[in-house]
Figure 1 (cartoon, rainbow, N blue to C red):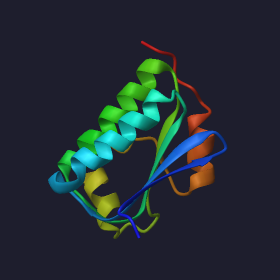
Figure 2: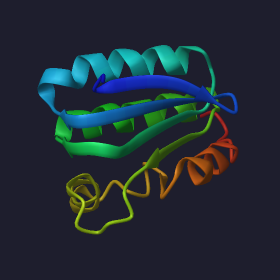
Figure 3: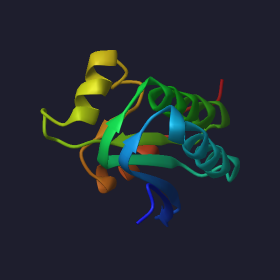
Figure 4: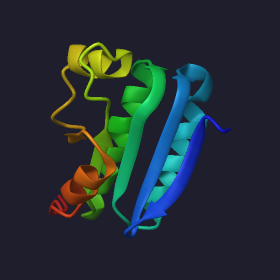
Length: 120
């Protein structure tokens, strides 16, 4: 099983991260995100199966959110509802949850992406 899968659901690109992600996987995640954004479709990162992310991955998430906003497509991030989840705690400790448009499941995230931002 891959640490990063890209799928389509309801015309939304879903990037699913599994396992641990840090500087070693940041370029792969960034490339997948850039490819997804280049298709000008809404983007969702599903982090429920991720066991760990570091600040380089958070930077990739924030950069993807910014690019989605700039081209006027939606963006959301799915995280575990478990408050003890390591990925959720990292996002909360960094204070970036609101920027990442957090959702508890894929359906809620897709709904968030339909609230299309206006380009800058």
